[in-house]
Length: 264
Ligand SMILES: [Zn+2]
Image (cartoon, rainbow, N blue to C red; front, side, top):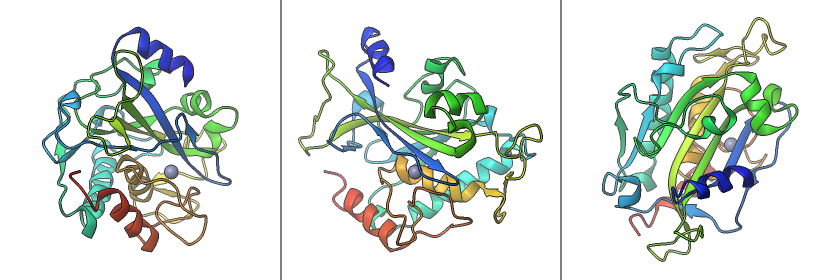
């Protein structure tokens, strides 16, 4: 990640990667994080073309189909349900999660650093569900075994100033989130792979992997929740444990801690 941040600094984009959170099956992986300080979205932040006090999201349809046989329409609908679930949280009542249409433009940038995609437009939406990418990408990002163990991950970028220091423009003592991207691992259900027995599906029990459950977890990170647990049970537990479409007590508490005072 330090290498990537050096590349970003050289391009004068005023962006830096801050954190990657891995959602795994069969044993957790640590968070990959740069600073000790947490980050938050800033309402009305013109740098990310904010939609006022709303948070926007986009589902990239070009990589939405899975090798396990799901169509892009199926995975998009499951991701939309996950966002709807978070929208229903009491402490998000002052925030509207607005879906932006996929125009066909490349909406993501993180994959470009690993040569798994182009460097797209980072500000088409605050949160981009980028789709299903191959095992080698997850191996490259997560290290040895990552391609087999990581179901998905969420990566958050923050804004930096012209000296490459993180910013806090609203003085809330949090670094300023710039964009968030969610990547899903297409290894699961690939007949040619040793994860063939864990196919992505819709409302499927283990050993299948339920798209909505993973999307709910990942977009929880996009809304700036960290991991909890492994106990008590929560959407934000770091290891996949089967279908979970309903946030639990620590998820509610986490959302209230982040969003209760929105907008700052
Ligand atoms: Zn996670």
